[in-house]
Image: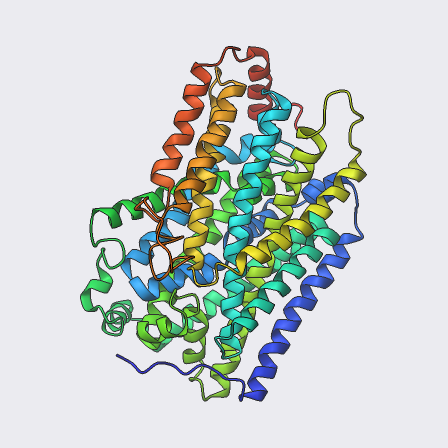
Length: 543
């Protein structure tokens, strides 16, 4: 086993100053984009959809930017560095999910909706109750995802400062929360989209750089890279075989299957991904955007495999785990080693550069998530679901003000929750968000688009029948209590054996929607379904 790569400490004043400078540059660039975009339109369509004037290529980069989060750059690569083959299997779930989006969701959602998921459902369902259910589920999903990104930010900056200080992580989480509130309240979707485009370009470029450097270190010999990773993993050949993390028993294998199911199905129910399809002018553009995103995401994940193996081969699993038990800091540690080590200028410069890219990744994704949750609150809950019939309708200006206020409140809530989840793996936290999205949002969306008999009761049962079990199972799982890595390690009240609830909650979401429809006293309106079908397939009447 290789010796642990030393971390840069506060004594490295020059290099510490460089790192802080790069972080400041990232923040200044994103703030400049926000101020520029904030002056280009104040209408609801500008705030929620960026004026619908982005090209497929631009939106494809933005989609990949939304999707390639801290879980991808930090969490998944860390899982590969620690668990080898099992980490790669985790990655495959993220990529396959885009086929579901391409074939079943992209074009239909763009034609049938306006700003949010609830817009699609409200075309044929009881307006207020369905919006209340879908809006609430969207806020919950985005909050879970936000927590993952902010935990990743805390780990990253703590590593950069060479400290395990809880105070450093706390202030980082608070700072990221404050920035994301500014991005959304000032710039809206236009600023968020351009930040995503810049971030996606930087992320792909940084991944290419690391991949090339790793391959050069091993003279392009992938077989030798894998052998070296196995030698420095502490697990030998088992590192390259299934079962290192998810193969110790039936429960572990079921947990992995549950996680894979959540990843494959969850993407099509993520609110910040669905809202991205409304930023292009047509359904054809939405489909082309998805194809661009698949290409970019696929290339990134292929490079992530090389980077993860490189982290194990060059840094060692023990050093990765020592820096962060969940593996979230494997990529910056690898960058430092590739640049020449902790004592070299090249090592610390590359370390700071890659850390700055990771920081940009987190800032961009939290902006998109905050915008999606604030849109769900203002557009679905405040302006419609909570508005009694007969009362004066909310104006566009009032709705946008409510969305900006909601962004501040949701950002503050995400900060508080993130402070309690700092020891959990970033990729794992995202897996929970995917499970809730696949349980609460995907069943009702597919039923609404493709099942003629689907009723309002079926929609409500589907959303709550997936959302409530998913949250309850997580609350009583080993993630929250009963283990040293749990949210509350000192107590044990868990009874659900799996870490990810998707295996149970996703079928329950579909089952609840089916049973609710069959037991509904009111039949579905065939005219409303016909209108939805024509609009989703042809674009007639689309926003």
